[in-house]
Length: 117
Image (cartoon, rainbow, N blue to C red; front, side, top):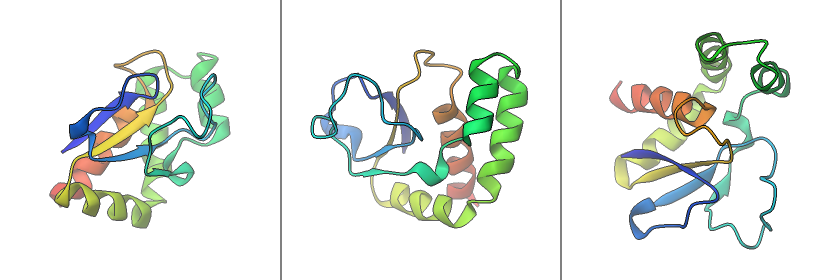
């Protein structure tokens, strides 16, 4: 199972393998305080794409499409995380305020598609 969770939410026992998927370290959290198994910058949106989305140059649909194209170039890394999700829960950690429209949701769907293929 692949879940998404804000870095500011408390860890849960059923989180399984916890991966920070932001390119930048989240504000207000010490590196020693974040319960995580790894920080995977390779699957985070590019800086240009992140800035375009946050400045509202791109809507979520356009951002999602562009981000999936970036993810396709990182397929091997995606397959690695997808394989982990086959053996244990995988929790993608992100800092965005919006719980519905964020890159972790797009990444989770992309990983799930790899998982099912």
